[in-house]
Length: 462
Image (cartoon, rainbow, N blue to C red; front, side, top):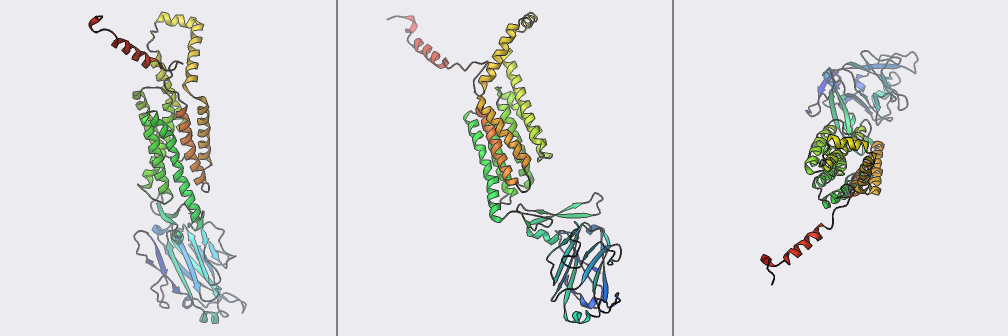
């Protein structure tokens, strides 16, 4: 067989094969089979005379990793059997793949894919073929089949394709180069609604795809709850993070489901995971009552760590544990900064420190004030609700699968933003050392000003 290269620069190493014979003349990949069939009988019974016709195909090393497509079409019932072998001629007891009929074939092999085969059509693929010489033997009738051959018209095609059936128009053909650099392996990257080796399996209907797309995109609207409360508390850094996270996640999933891509898929994926991680950690940092300078420092360190996580394996299940651990570490550092800021006004001389260590009552009083501060710092019902929503987010992350991704990932969006809202709402602002803010300050100040205005000018009394 002679190789005819397909002129398609976007799909490399695709070709079809035509017989190097004067018996047929064809400018298309399909060539007539009957003129090439041999009449040499291999059978002994007059009613069971069979002959073998072989076609030798050379697969160059650059084309290995693709798929061989064999197809026969006839206007009458096909009585041929096809056997394939690598590196030698196939026989009934020696072959790599074969097709006798719709029930007797190599369809159980993971490298043999049968399509659209019936009495008048045979179509199958041998995938991820090796480079070298492949032999295809067509077993057919001779003496009793002569009349049939003279009446039937059968065409055959042998071709090399990168992806079976062009991914059924429901995906894109992707190529990867083997480590040796000699082979180019191809596979189908299917869209959200289809799957299978060639993207021919419909996973979800068109209407179901619409509902799933709406769910994945609209569930990001839950960012409004923590963003609104952060803005109301004038926590502008957290407001920017929550808002950016919700918008970037919506844009990423709009691109992922094939609706619209504002930027490249990789950029949108990075932004989605990075800002989601940042939103979780920033929620923990917000719970500590620290100055803006310390908060910016912690946010900068966290931004670097979460960016590395989003760039290297963002979809790993362990990431949710790492993000919570980083957030807890940020909260602990914030509490330590707050503690030293509140108690740095005390002079811890050696004598005072020695007295404190020997005065257990003083230590107990200090510890009691610390517990009182922590208890009054938070609305604890919302703290528990926040951890419950965070646990639901972790469960949703772990339960995601190909079939249920849209549901559990939508639940992740709602759960993670709801937990952020509960946490930031649980913080009671203005509690220091267990005491609420001095609400009488403004009233005292106004009273002092009023009395100052009532004094006679220059100290004179009229």
